[in-house]
Length: 398
Image (spheres, rainbow, N blue to C red):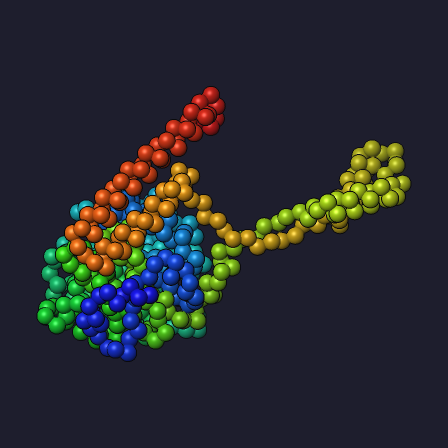
């Protein structure tokens, strides 16, 4: 991608041996060969509000991330049970006494893992820590953190250091989240440098080196994925406007899970082979078959024998075959072709805005986004009105 070339190179602030992150469109991400361990982090700014959009984005991706981390879930005990993601187990930690904050993991169901710790410090941070266990190799520890904006950075650094002291020994570690510490300012802000040095002391390096939150007035690097597995790790940011934070991801070439191949997006279907030639052959064999064994006095026995012969000849001439077919993730039925094209145009305007952060570009993007949201809402209502009208007299369907 050449998108990153539009940003000031000063954001490449650390060891030049670390692989650089890039900005990706969905189409570019779909071209990547993803194997090993894959993680994506979203700052959702209310998981309830943006859950449908996150699901739509994940479904549009060719390969499925094994670990999905979410910060700013804004969940409560009453609201976190209805946000299940098909094929994943959910683990989450919510704030105790205030709205906002909160972190969560979605982990693919075939991965054996457990929550080993969770931390909630009022007005400072939330963190959840899970461990993936193996019998003959190092376990993997993953943590998702969210630091409250404006909270004491020194306290956050100390608590994070206490967490890392417990989890980093002889383990592969990934720490992701929204830290609300702008790493671009490491040279001019002592506490940012203190935070980075603390992470470096535990052998953890940031995989994202480009702004993750971009507005008209600022471009900050506050969302990241730190790890002690830097070699052969691909990282990047996904251009998407689910929230005002770009999703960040890391793909580590670790031979620990079965590869995520295209076949994962395929399903096997059974189809009866019934061509005209097959059916004619079936009829011909039935006509020429010796049916003497069917002509017996016991009608039940005669029926069973006939059915057995019929099915045997049928399966022989028209066998069932297995076919692999792409899993088609059905788009929402109210989304017309025109609305889908409009969604693509909205993303073009969004990219233009974050590449060239002018008031005009921001205004064009926001106006188009608002008009599109209104059009989708109207079309959705029309769709359900049509369904209700069509089935007005069918109480079972309404």
